[in-house]
Image (cartoon, rainbow, N blue to C red; front, side, top):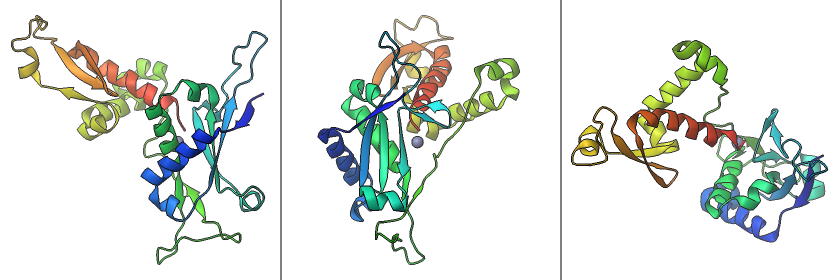
Length: 227
Ligand SMILES: [Zn+2]
């Protein structure tokens, strides 16, 4: 069974910092967010038995829920973030900030026609869940069986064809054919030159033919964790 513990003070503080920095609207009306750490059930050897958190049946690094009016009265919080404690332990500061930003982005203030935030009977700001901008599920085997006819490959291709998507989600591909192949002794094979890419801040060199697969792998990792 998943076990829970209250978040340490520094995690609560980081949550408040992230809200102030990226979610001024929530911060301005005093949305209160509680944070829990979840730890997976373990077998006799101390190995995890299944994920600590699931969202719609999928393992997740973190999730957020809006607290009901009744529980708000009792507990004094408007929303609750739950984070996989083992993932949190090994996450960098930047990754922790991104996890919290993702979860807080799910919170949307409900406003009236005049733009004022609606409040419940406890005078707490009313919230709704914002859905992901992008949401999809892929089966590798379907992509393999049906190729370009599959939704999987069509979605992947649409992403790869979108410069805006690549800039937002993946990495910058530095240079074009001319400046990656000219005068570089590593680029002996002009048909498949080595190119420089930056993947999540990490500079990499790879053959151009590898870039598409790398993007797909990177994309899978990007979307596998957080819900
Ligand atoms: Zn999410």
